[in-house]
Image (cartoon, rainbow, N blue to C red):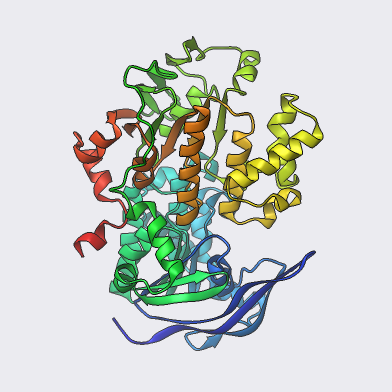
Length: 536
């Protein structure tokens, strides 16, 4: 590894200015990043890690201001760069992979067009840019590059959109790549491909990689050095293995103890689900075909069957495009199934009317993957959480306000935030609000579609603990959809492994994790972050 310092950050101090006055986001941090080095910044939501990343690419929020300090990239001072200068720097000198693909891709432009524009903006001839765009899509694991290039963002899964953003960031071979939670929406197999790609850039091309992540397993697997942030300050830094084996700061030890990917051998301690209990949900022979005569293709969901134990948790796992989220949408009546049945508490709900579904909504609630898109930005948190209560005419305004406050506290947020709006919260805080809203009606079944992907490790642990406590106390049942097998092991009773729309295998959680019958399941388990530390 070359010793040349590419990025030099000195005494960087950033503050946010709003109606409540000045809030310090970054409190005088120092660090360096060498060419060919991977540096991971870890910490909870609000620690300042994403604010730091935004400053390094000139994309700070309008109410944020660099108050002092220096950012030098290859000797060039960036704190005084104009927006015109930044337009040249971004893409060519710094590649940026933002956290949320839903907000970062143009919804009205084809994927290929957006990649070509990223290349031609920096002088690549259009014919070469078209071919290069296809190569980039393949490099990030999108094997059907031509089809993806013709598509629009809404036609891709969340994981596929994230891979497109990574392709855009790598398009012009910048010497520095800043990746802000680049794998939070990806299944473990694709996550490994992306991290392998970033590691190859660092090792073979001397690209410096700044990795912002809440997943300590990812950071410890892939980074040369770790930088731990807490409340805007750096509390610990050092070689990744050194920090893992001998953390010096209490906050670092807290993060390590809470990280699901580092605790994959642990199992939650909850009451065992009775094996003879009647399932709350039974899915039989579920199939869905989205293909047309113009675009023929395999079934999106192909003869899927499984059950969900009453008061227990069934998890659907698999790669992006495996059919797990489509299966959930069929169960929820958001897509019309082609064949099969869905029995909920003994009732076939697969073909009920819209009016009947309205009553079912009180008994079945959903937490979606994307906290940015699922919360109305115009409403306060009180209005958002109270919305289901108001829709079903439950309680008066004062009671609903108290219920909203209680729910906020249950998901580890202070009641004083009731008047705040989603834009004032971090991604992790927004997802906790979405969970609070789903719990408002105390449903029987909670469908959780990647509910923890936006949360840092310690908050993941809190939410998992909360879900376990609620299940014990309220008798809830969970249909849990996730690509994060470490989390799945901690929460599940029954696991269903899906691939290409079909069930590969299913069974008791411990059986799947300790004695998987399928080679595909074994490959998923081998890709869980943190495993490289065990063998490195």
